[in-house]
Length: 124
Image (cartoon, rainbow, N blue to C red; front, side):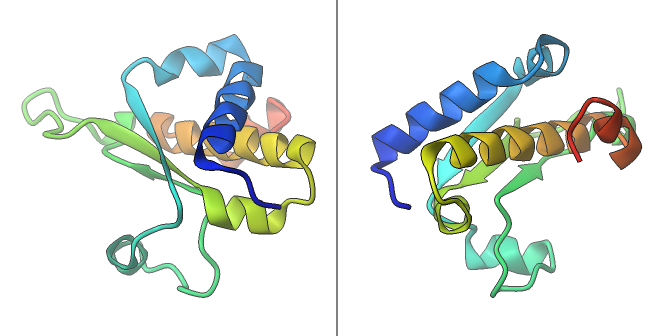
């Protein structure tokens, strides 16, 4: 499935609106950036396989790793990658569900949450 950039952005907004409030409030100081796909540099820095691009990536310093004496220089960012998500989904409902799951997982990286904590919230 393929959407225009504007339609994909609307799908991202709807997906984020579905995230439970106790998780969604953690997005206040996080930038959400929709990109067509991860850059080659990002793939290299994260040591990801180039033939299996991620749906999203958290880029920043997680809360447990932060230091009051050495704050982050750049804002935390969650990148959502349109093309890999579209390639994996058959329809808009499936796409929005996958975006929701992706954003929650990336917020979890920011918070330092475990996979078990995510599963308890229904995000496996």
